[in-house]
Length: 375
Image (tube, rainbow, N blue to C red; front, side, top):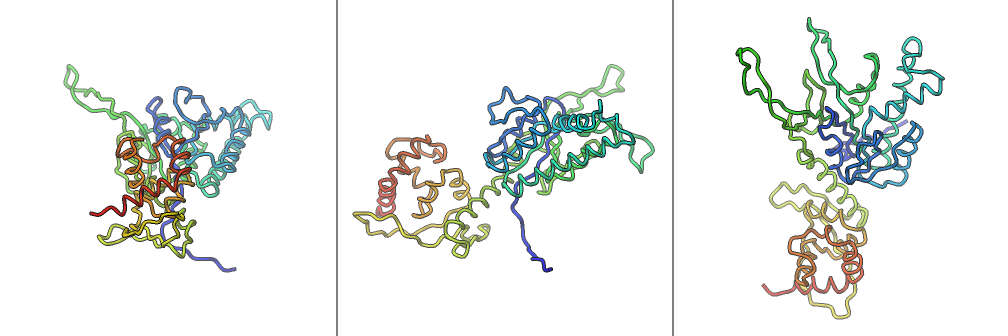
């Protein structure tokens, strides 16, 4: 048997775990990920304007909903909100199958062994969401404070852990942390500002919401992208990770359109490098062709990422004629349809379908005229 050796970066969707104290904003942060779809296991997103599947009432229903997402690919990010409530469904399924009242009713910890096995199956299924469907996965969980006995220390201390497992022997929390690419712990940051009347005890104040990206004795967190140890509780701090993901996806789409052998992706950090090289392609026939003095300009990675947000039909027309988003913006602005600088993907969908795609020869004619104006 022979195996293929590969090298280089692998641009895969992210597996992210977000946990923190109650009400900190875990669901709000998850809703900021690219095109999220929620499986709301506890009904906490009722007042949020998000896409969601029906609240699962059993472990089997939760499984079927994940399988449906793999099959239909209706989003760019799947959010399980929260996993501790999903774990309850799994526990209930185990107890019902064995006619037990509680997970602790099994002898010799057998119930927790079954729980770990079942959670492992669900994590494998979520891995298929990544590998098969190409969709990011975000899992949220509540945090709780537990006493921790460090092997090389004499005394125990309190630390934040995921609210998973009823006993310390349950390992579902560790399984989740090991499975994830990024574990973010969210909490309120307290500032020490004063002493009490006796001058002995400090008082804390401040309600700044932050997320921690690396391990601490007081909590678990990790990342593989050299993020700062502490960030404001906002998607802005990690948005660049998914911007790079969009750029790569758009580059792959261009390769599919023109063939990988015809496209060269070059690092644009060098002064004279060109990010995306696209070969010349035939233009849409024109009854009155204009003698062109215009030369094609390669797309930048930012333009490629912006174009990925457009309908495939418009993308294909733009790529076939090397039209840049800024050229469409200029043509649309001159006609007075939308204000200057408004991104094309924010135009009214009916306008994109009816005018930009439906009347593309006229739109492209305007762009060609603009290209050939004398300097």
